[in-house]
Length: 224
Image (spheres, rainbow, N blue to C red):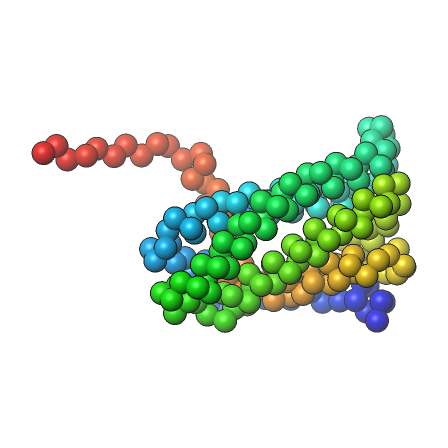
């Protein structure tokens, strides 16, 4: 099971993630949207969405840099494994709290506002539950990591991730003996990648980044 979950399943999840997203965009482009319900309850959506997206962007960036940067680079920069782990715990913990509050607000809005609930599909709610579960596991790993600040477990996860992205065997051996919560966190992350193309998460690929650099739009009010 360890071999399947941490050596085989990551490639299955990544393949479905990439091919499924391409096929959905090609075959069903009109479903490629976030299905915003902002018009129904705007204030709570904005607060929850800003907190969630702020937190999740920091978390994803931290995971990408922390896991995929070669260990030799950190060694060359003089950054010890302990310092790297403390930084990950601090930044990830703060971002995780922001993300957690945002997800609770978004999930509460989906479940307890009758109008929003009536316009929500099963996948709309399910993806929020999956993300909340993944976030809770991630916050749980922080409490475990605080008892092992030598950075050895961090190195294991880096070796695992880098073996996966470089198509090398034996990746599962690096995390075969880590705590269960870490294994659950990685497995649920792969599951989220697997279901990604079939949910509203595809709107991430169409984030309106261009709005940040577009020219100002001048709007004049009509004089009475």
